[in-house]
Structure formats: C-alpha cells, structure tokens
Image 1 (cartoon, rainbow, N blue to C red):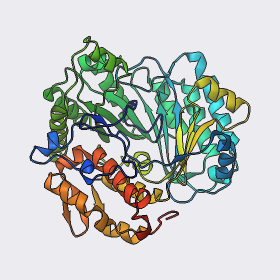
Image 2 (tube, rainbow, N blue to C red):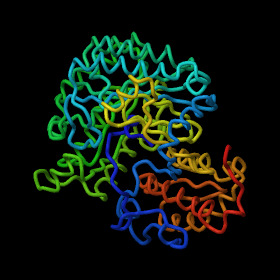
Image 3 (tube, rainbow, N blue to C red):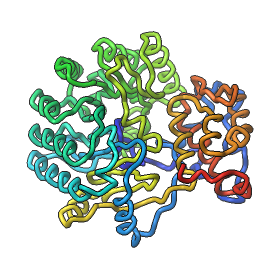
Image 4 (cartoon, rainbow, N blue to C red):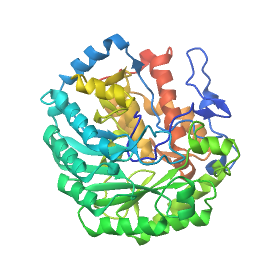
Amino acid sequence: MFVAKNDEPKFAFDAPRMNGKNFVSPAKGQWSMEQYFAREGVDPLRYAFEGKIAVHPGAGGKRIQPSMVEQTLEDLSQKPRTGLSVAYIHVPFCETQCLYCGFYTKAYGKEQSAQYVDALIREMQLWDGRPAQSQGPVHAVYFGGGTPTALEAADLERLLKAVRTYLPLANDCEITVEGRLHHFNQEKMEACFAGGANRFSLGVQSFSTEIRQSMGRLAPREAVMRGLETLMGYGQAAVIVDLIYGFPNQSMEIWLEDIQTAMDLELDGMDCYQLNIFSQTPLGKAIREGRMPPAADIPMQSSMFAASVEKLQKAFYYRLSLTHWARSSRERNLYNQYVKGSANCLAFGPGAGGNLAGWFFIHQNRYDAWLEHVNSGKKPTAMIMAPSPHFYLYRAVAFALEHGWIDMDALEKKFGVELSALLEPLLEQWQRAGLVAVSEKKAVLTLAGQFWQVNISQLMQDFLKHYLEDSELTGRVADASGA
C-alpha cells in the first residue's frame, strides 16, 4: 500500500514466493484449488509454507492511465471523506542506512530540514479547503520515514503545528512521530510535545549493541535505554519500540533479552516483527556475498515468534494486532490498525502512498520530482489505482486476520456474499494443516496460523477474488462495491 509506511520495519518488496517459485495470483483458466493449500503432515508453525508470500497482503486494483491521473485526483479531491481516516507524512532523510532497509533514499543534512518542511507545508496547502482534506475528522496522523526525528527541533514543531492547521484532527487524534534514539535529544523531544505529538514509535530493533551496530544502528544499548527513559520521563505520550527477530547472529537468548529489556523499561508497548531480507538491500547483498552470516531461517524465526507470544502473554501484555503489544491503555496503535483496513489515508511527502475511498495513490518517489511538483502548485501524485469492486470486503478480511480471527457471519450480513460457503474448502484444508480452528462461522488462527498470517490473508483474498471477479461464479454473489 505504501512506499514508506506505518511503523513496521522499512523493507523493500521482492516478488512473493510460494513453494520455491514466484507466486502469482492465478489467471483465469489456470486456477487450481491446491495452490491455496498449506502443507499437511508437518509441523505447521515451521513448515506450513516454504516462506512468506507477501509483506502487506492485498487484492489490488487497476492502475489508471497516466493521462488520467491529474483529472482523477481533481475529482477525488472534491469528494468528502467518510468513515475512518488517517494521514501519513513522510520524511525521507536518514543519517545512515540500516543494512536491512530497502527504503533508504536520501542522506540527511541540516540545511535540508527547513527547506523540506517548507515544501511539506506547501503540499498541505494545495488541498486546503477541498472536501477530501478538510471535511471529516482525521483519527490518526503518522510521521514516518526515513527518520522524522532527524529534522531540526524548530522544524519538527512547526510541521506538527501545520498538521493541526491544515487537517481536521479528531479530538482524540493519535499523533505518532517515528524515529530513532540517535540524535533525538531533549530539545527535539520537547519540540514534538509543543507541536502536539502524543505517541512515539522508536526503531530500536534490538537492544544488543553487537546486533545493532552490525545492522548499521549507531547508538549502543546504554544510550538507547537512557533516551527511552528520558522520553518516558516527560509523561506526555505513549512510547513504544519496534523489535525485530531473525537478525544474523541473533540467538533465541538475545531475542528474549530484547523483549525483557523493553518490559523492564515499562514502555507503553512494543512491536515484534519478523526480519524479511530482500536482495537489493545491503544486508541481502552482504549475506549473498558471504560478508555476513545468514539470518535465521524460517523454522528458527517461527520459534522466536512463538517464544515472544508466550513471554508477553505470561506478562499480561495484550494484543492490539498480531504484531503489536500494549502494556498500558495509553498505547492504542490507531494508525497501524486503521490503515490495515479500509480507512482513508491522506498522504504527504515523496514516495508517500494514500487511499481515498479505495483509490490508492502514490506520490513521486524522487525527491527532486516531488519538490518540483509542489513548488509548481501541483499535487505530486505519480500513480493511482482504481479500487476493485469488492475493495471493502477484501480490506475487511485483511483487517480481521490482522487481529487473528474472522467472523464470516458478520461479513456475510454486511457484504451480501456467501463467504462461509465460498471459503469452506479452503478453511477445511487449513484446519487439517493446523492453521485455523473453525466453529460457528468463525475462523480463529492457531499460533501457527498467526505466524503465517500474511500468507493466509493474501491467499484468502486471492481466493475470493477468483470467485468474485475472475470466474464464471461471479454472477451468483452480490456486488459489494460501495459497502
């Protein structure tokens, strides 16, 4: 959905893989039920599939012609948003590139901070007063990157205040600033508070100095912990960290120690993510060329996932989604939850992606091209995807599975689709494989199913897409468009 997105680790995308081959949704006339099935007769946690087939599951839409982008965007800008809405503000700068990151685009220099914030504010002004931006509350705002905390303190404060000026924020709007602890000093922290930030998502990834520095993270363990303690000490915002399992040289002991450290700091929450390695990243190249040992394999990663679930449940953390854990009620994780469903998303900055009523758009990724468009008074959109006729159904499925279960009866009533009947053969096989438990039109992911959730979500959406759009059965189900 996003070139630079919410607070999940910034990994680039390779072609998804299934059973060692590039996985592609089946074309009409080339479909077989078996390609949606998991392996049976194996430990499902470790071996249900060969690997992950998606990073952000989705059924996609149809790309509109480049010549129609400007007019389509103009039409979308005149339609008021309805339902849940969020906003994403992208900051592309980083002081250094982390080895695993596929989203690094622009090195940071102090002189760029004011110029960039000036341009971001101009971009917000382009649609000021237009219904798509100015009508309907915005429930969550996310400053992502890149590294938003790389910006200078004065620029962070005025950018946050500009968001309040040009976006109609809900009274309880969650305003998240993502970043790293390196160079995130008290002056910058206080500037964020002055601008209205009420949530911080810090990319710690690991508290181990050895693991951190091997991945290009600059601050050692002690500095990271001091920074978190300082930020928590203000008592002004929810503070959470990202943790990643599966790094090269990261043992189970180190992974569990990372979780324990976050727990000991009494942070408001943490996110536990699986490392995905892609060929174009420095880490992918280093492993391929033998300059770094391999990362944990899928069986080891699945064991690390299971260990984190057990440890956090025993400590009475509660799950906001399968990867997001909260210790206190201050942590809500609204942006990440809403954006995984069908919420509208206003987007600002180079490479940022958004969504208006199912119409997905992505801005110019090159900084210079984005800046040129903004300075000429044009919205810097490079591409728009028209929604599938069943967009809202697919997103409802994706949202439900992000939380570990799906209520087919409720979705049938909402969308008029024979969901339980359509999914029955798929769910029967997944139940035999140990990935789901089905009862009374509800399918609940097992621990193994939780680990393989992205596969299950992608396959289920592709399966429904085949029946609802690509096959001769289309006529027997109701059209869910506009639901």
